[in-house]
Length: 178
Image (cartoon, rainbow, N blue to C red; front, side):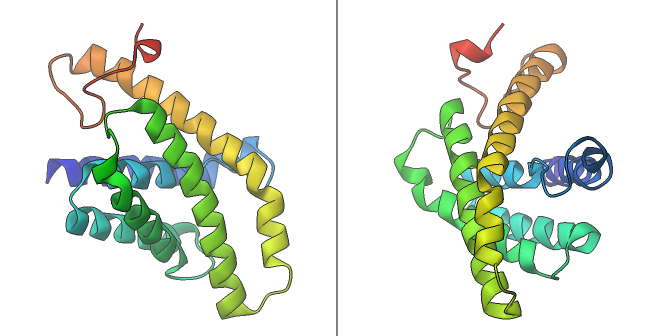
């Protein structure tokens, strides 16, 4: 229960940052997707049913606050979670570079899924072009945000929880340690 509370707390802070604070600083369509980063982390470290339900609920809650199409983010985040779960048995889930790579792959998958869903269900012209034009900067923003969050979490863990292991941060890479 405490992990679910942590996930929803992080998601709440991320949603406030993404919807209220970052649009003031960054140009309109561009903002890092911290919910996506959380879902990639869930995919690496949670069981399929629990993590899938959490990913879908996080997406639906995000739709309730900032979504234009109800259920779209739930669908997108669940798809990303399932894609990450599909490779989790074949990779070292403790690898920090893997998390960064999966955030980039998740951003690409999210763009493809969103373009497909919006094109299929709403018949808006130019969705593919619009979303893929924004993709390079969105990839960069998500990658940099994941990198910064990873470093920040490692520092917070060392200061406040030196003997407690967070899943995925047990074997820190040497370039993240200070």
